Image (cartoon, rainbow, N blue to C red; front, side, top):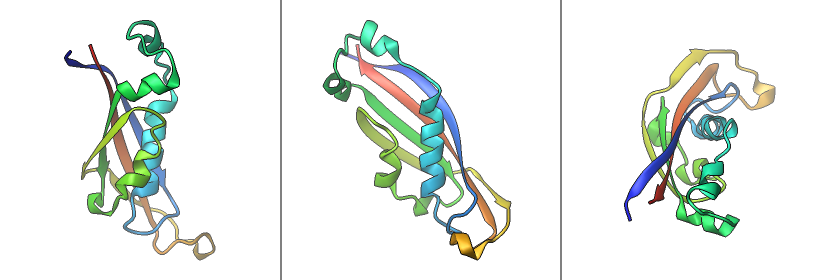
Length: 125
């Protein structure tokens, strides 16, 4: 069998009230954004994955672009993926924009952190 890409989805996540150099929440939101607007009936109808436990056979690779790539908790970020064999790659990217600092919300800076995600689902075919 050969691993074949089934779908690639792109998402964006924003953390307006996070810690200055922690991109984990924005990364999670980017992953959820990428996967939330699609349905993968082909996994069931074409690839023959019939039950939720069959979905372990699909491979889900996440590539994150983040302003502070070394500050992402990769285990937490991957929890945004519900099924499959998960892997992650984090690269420098994303965006930092000036926002507002509201101490009552736990902010420690006025930075808005933006991360991008490319989520690729592959199956053995």
